[in-house]
Image 1 (cartoon, one colour):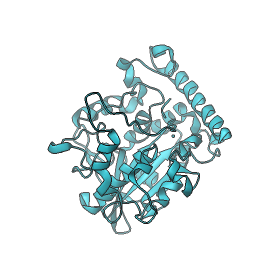
Image 2 (spheres, one colour; image 1 turned 120 degrees about the vertical axis):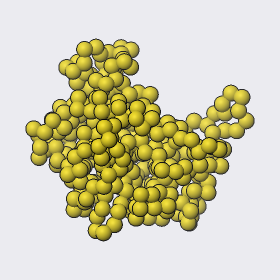
Image 3 (cartoon, helix red, strand yellow; image 1 turned 120 degrees about the horizontal axis):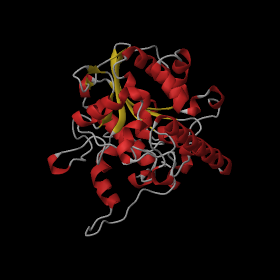
Image 4 (tube, helix red, strand yellow; image 1 turned 60 degrees about the vertical axis):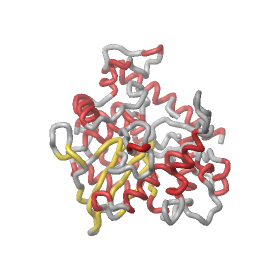
Amino acid sequence: MAERQQSTGGFIQAQRLAQAGHFAATCPETGYQGKAYRLAPHLRTFNLAPSIRETALAYFDDKKITWHTHASHGLSSQVCCLNFLMPLATRPGVLSRVIANALGIEPPEMLEIEDGPKGEPWFIGFEWIGERDYLNEGGASSSRTRGANATSSDAILRFRHAGHIETVLIEWKYTETYGAPIPNKVREGGTRTPNEVRSDRYRELMFAPNGPIRDDLNLKLDDFFWEPFYQLLREQMLAFQMERFREAETDHVRVLHISPAGNRRLHDVTSEDLNRFGEDAFAVFAKTLVDPTAFVGRTIEQVFGPLIAEMPEDPWAAYLSSRYTFLAPTDSADGPPRSRQS
């Protein structure tokens, strides 16, 4: 464990230095709050790839999507996801190859998700919460906001393969690591703990046959009140319900977890009650599922590395290679990724 944490600490520090160098070369003002890898909030567009700066702002505004708190942070996983994927929203051919790498299939036919900010078809969407309130998160009005106060997938893709329509919900991580259970403090003036509220909301959506988790392992919802398991559970419940109700006529919905190979600590099993299933958080989570194939864990290097290496002159590939130094071939053999924004 100590070796893993030291390795991850080295990875995080290397990424801080890389992002500080990137900002120094591309942004007129850096060093927000004394940290060279952070930008002042009003400079957050410099955290995005040049090709998507205006597009991302227009898209988030048009879809009423909430930016994460640290949108101006060089280690933001939301921004990292956007930089890798948003330039491909109108490039279904490249996106198809990304999916082929991630799922180990032949390049599929990508299907439109929604309109882009200029009315053009987009083959990927961001901060997806589903077309209906599957997880009882909207209250009496069922009102939800993409990216805030509801289970939101970092990205969504849909494609046709082998005669079936499949949807993939993407959960993206960069330098996150986890350890403590999720906060459970009663808010001022409140009478119930957050976990009591969560239990009421999700209890009937968790276990088979009404949810994705096996009912023969003596598990309870409280066992998942640790990150990354709580996020994974909500994503998987969303995927299960989208498939159950055949959102967009989808036959199968999977969750694809993507993170850098160097972030090994992300794989730590934080939940004491899930330790009995193994030492890798994502392998452990798959073991709790009725359908283990409904969850796929891949590294950024596995999914994007081959494509970026084949098209180094492409502006999309060139930007990613320059900014995200862990994509260098010498780093790709570091092993599987392991999860707190620093």
